[in-house]
Image (cartoon, rainbow, N blue to C red; front, side, top):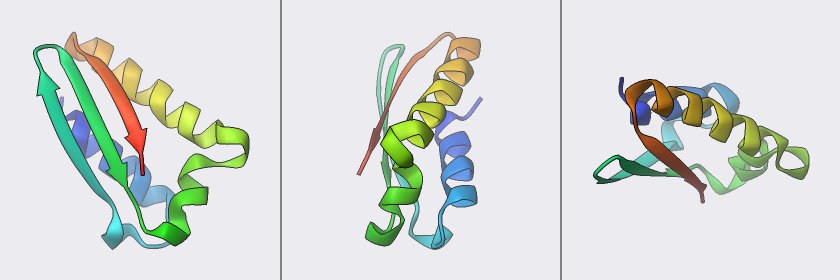
Length: 77
């Protein structure tokens, strides 16, 4: 399962500028760090009111990572 592709697909569905979505992946054994970067105007959409959307994205990504036997951290810029 490609965690990076899953995060890109989720982010592109949320933002107004899907072409500006990029994800940097850092892998250290079973630990995966994904850094999501979106257009500055779309940052609020990805974070959501009081961080609700960001928490939901992180929950989905953690569930996907568990099915792969990995631990994922999602950072949003």
